[in-house]
Length: 314
Image 1 (tube, rainbow, N blue to C red):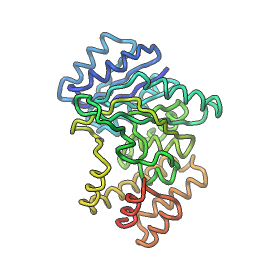
Image 2: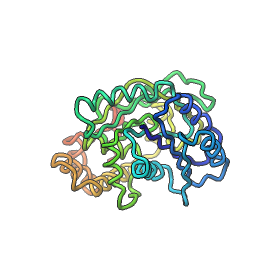
Image 3: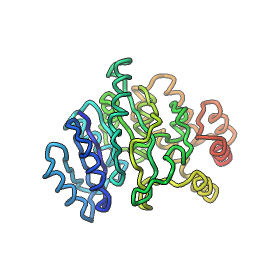
């Protein structure tokens, strides 16, 4: 069984397209959990309609208060793991559209890895995504081609500094989700920046994370995305224009590292424990020591330009 965790908030414009794309796969092994984050539009009515028509596949869960998408995703993941355990789990955005290969590509590779290493090894897979405009017209590129993230290096030190996982294409096994759920048993830590980043760090620290270089969704860009995508040059322009804002982002990233250490200190191996302690030290070390720690541990971003910027502003 595969649990789909969809975080919804005022998604009336696009959520029907997403749900239909899931239902049209015709798979009997999918269970879609929609966690509505106190929407003020017709999202609940729309999802309720699907739930009534497909009661075995669609389940609506209404939050009592607005959690924000990161907490909603992670607590939604834990909810499904506790109340309806499955073999595999995926995150799902409300405004994208799944391609026919969304499950098959990931499931095939997951089964290969589990046969090789056993189902007890935590695994996260993620794929590329076709960039589209708000009307699903393809933009001639994919997420990772546009953003130039380094998916060939997804080791733990680099992931501490930069998220290289796109959650809406993720595919996680039960072994990984159990560990993530455990990290939330004492409540949600507000220092967690992104749900997919947290999942990627967890997989990298305790198991295996892999990128599959095949698009499996249409990644809709409409201006209201929680995490949108522009061109790489747009990214560079934004970073140059807001140096202090970028320093704030780095501080938040280091704080997330502290949250990760707090959640998993008893489980981390000695190597990862030392690495994350030195990452946390970036928050208080002097400028020269910060640069030394980055170079020593490989706390890198993707590409030469990003890393020059990091070393300049850290």
